[in-house]
Length: 82
Picture 1 (cartoon, rainbow, N blue to C red):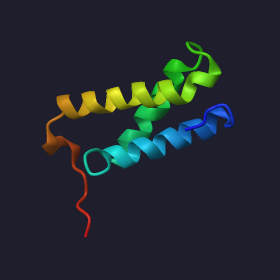
Picture 2 (picture 1 turned 60 degrees about the vertical axis):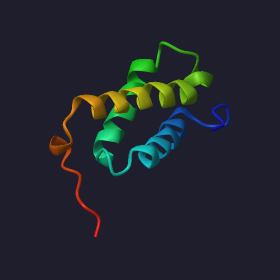
Picture 3 (picture 1 turned 180 degrees about the vertical axis):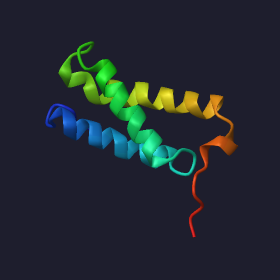
């Protein structure tokens, strides 16, 4: 990912796509999107803008992994693909 050439919204979208690909089938897309957007808000004034992509990916991924560990699979209710 190249962060310096993107606006913050583009970075958030790009990270969302990466994490959606990684967690597809294990978490609903809406939950992945919620985590990515919440993580961006948490990071917004805490880091240098050029570091947003990497930090958003790392922290978002860690939060999604924690959700998978703490939530029983039956509660996630991911629709089956046909």
